[in-house]
Length: 423
Ligand SMILES: Cc1cc2nc3c(=O)[nH]c(=O)nc-3n(C[C@H](O)[C@H](O)[C@H](O)COP(=O)(O)OP(=O)(O)OC[C@H]3O[C@@H](n4cnc5c(N)ncnc54)[C@H](O)[C@@H]3O)c2cc1C
Image 1 (cartoon, rainbow, N blue to C red):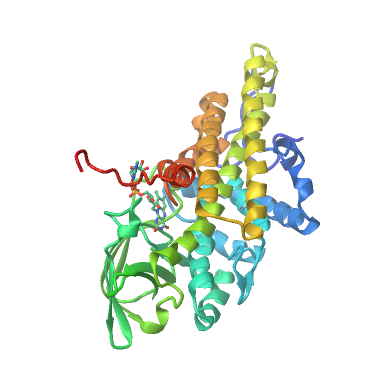
Image 2 (image 1 turned 120 degrees about the horizontal axis):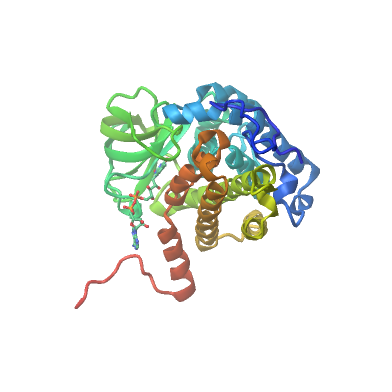
């Protein structure tokens, strides 16, 4: 493997020779052969493998060389959107109306490759496809799907998904934003927080409580009076993603923009199940990036006159990482098959999201350490992934929330809401 594949980027200077050995130049990502130890790629069809390589090449060629300055400036790389559109992947598993209709396995390897390259880009695509487009695909009427999905599949119109509120994150089922019917419109009032893409999105799906007390989805189109989205600044993770604090003040939405199949919060949860599955794949991709970088770096970096890769303790750490990645990929392929067979459940998906995110955080922290000082320099990419994985840990439900979902399923006890002593 050529450990220095790709071009040196960012602020990397040409590095002087030291100790008779070349110092390591960024970037140092490896190829798929480095992390696919049990040849799980062989389980993919030729088409799936070709798409996977296409997305990987795209990320290596178009994203890796430009992403760090955007991350430092906390700007979204709009220049990538038309290029992402040409990949034809927007919408992931959503089918019909110009959408790719991928199987869960295909969508999974696509998301893995997006995330291996960059978690801000995979999050942008995830919010647009797995949250906004999936909401419309699963809960929209035929007319709504025909109207909204084709331009979204071409990435001409961008989607966002507004569920979380300032006062309701893990307990978002208690959301307080309201939707009141007035003639041919619904009038929305309330606040949303953390909503990705919302500062520039064309369609923001706002989840609000109707007069019947049930939660529904309302497509708010760009420029609607009373809709105000302010970017949340000072983030230390996913700095390219534009997360917004939203105020809705008498926002009037035509009645035909209420998602026809969204009757209760259970319908919203169908969307969350599908997107949580995609987030699990993101963690696998991020973990692979950490491992590949640590391995390639250890082969190139010399200390005490020998490559780091020759030291027993370094090999032990690399072997542990590889075992974790192999474990995650095996589990995730099986979960994807179960999803394709319709044998899915929220606890099954929650177990995956919890486990991989926890492993990915550990692998990236280890990789960061194995690059020494270079581990905290953006040029080597591990630092960015390490910061970004913190947000993946939180969004779509924290580690704790996933554990509570699994715990309730395996024990029969709901531990979400504690009962006060004496009650
Ligand atoms: C970068 C980013 C992007 C996001 N994008 C979107 C988006 O596009 N759209 C959207 O709608 N939302 C989005 N979110 C919101 C995200 O889903 C929430 O942040 C998440 O659900 C957690 O909610 P919270 O931040 O309010 O934390 P809280 O719910 O306040 O949780 C704080 C802590 O308390 C713990 N906790 C909560 N309840 C319990 C319990 N019962 N038992 C034990 N511990 C508990 C949690 O695990 C956590 O550790 C995004 C968040 C981030 C950070």
